[in-house]
Length: 321
View (spheres, rainbow, N blue to C red):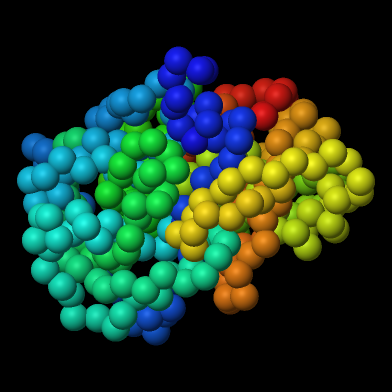
């Protein structure tokens, strides 16, 4: 998640991986229409303006925000279907329960987590989120794994109401009103399939595939494959395997890591890529592959979840360890 600076990125690059949403299903809400948050920007503008990513070298999209006036680092997670608030933090700020069925959440691995729903107002820089509904779950394990607490995960309910300009090279994020955002001419559009579980893009592994992978900004790894998918793509062919801890909403697991000589994504080829191999839970809708920040961080990523659109600027062929 450099011996003198145990940042989340250096830990995750060397030892493990983080996949918070991972196509999580909130089973209690599958048949209930969940209200969308109201998004507003200071001064009535069309965008938030640049919001800096405060920790250089961090492999997660952590933004400084507030909930009910209380400071709360927030993770931008396109793999999480809904926003999540840590249970202890929710009690500290006095979040009111929302009228809804119990929340049953599955992560990329492990068993289910059970919680409740709450209503809250939040701010992320100049962006205000009003009437936001969230799942209240225990996030202490995933926060401890990374070394910095983040009591809020902003999921696709928020991302579906904006166009997110995730500029990894310049370490900043801008949220736009979708109807006012003009896509840059330099952006290449990536073919994606949009569905309840998120945006899926094609990935090839050493010339095999394509594999349909969830675009997941809550996953720190470059590429994660289920055990079955890894076997189909030839990654369990006797090559060197090591194990490392991995954490999701389902808990901490010991996943396998292997090296792939080539991974193809968005018309680019990346060489010598570390691939996480996980055993997914027996729950419907859990993805069989994830494209995470380990690949996305080379790009300026334009993400319009509501319109099912993904654009990339920059990045040439190369390493994506």
